[in-house]
Length: 82
Image 1 (cartoon, rainbow, N blue to C red):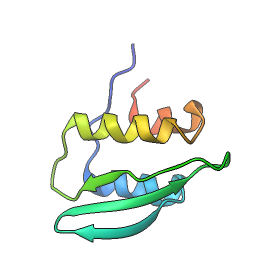
Image 2: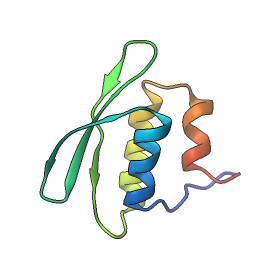
Image 3: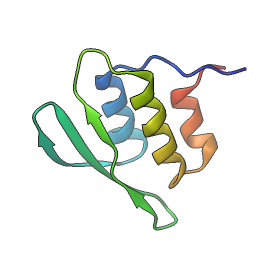
Image 4: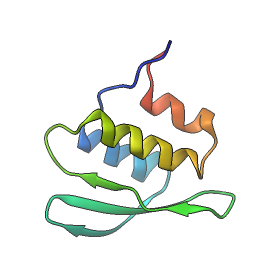
């Protein structure tokens, strides 16, 4: 059974910006908001805390938000181990 990966904030931001073409829309303190729009016209705004380590809950919430707007095959490879 695949397990959720430990992903750093830097790595998660890189994934959002390069793989999903999400745009940084604002930052308040250490939290960065992104605008992500899928090919189907749906969009969402994940918020990433820019800390040294982020909880699995944040990673899982970001994964679920991206699943709403991108195909599972594209999203799952970045968040789960094989």
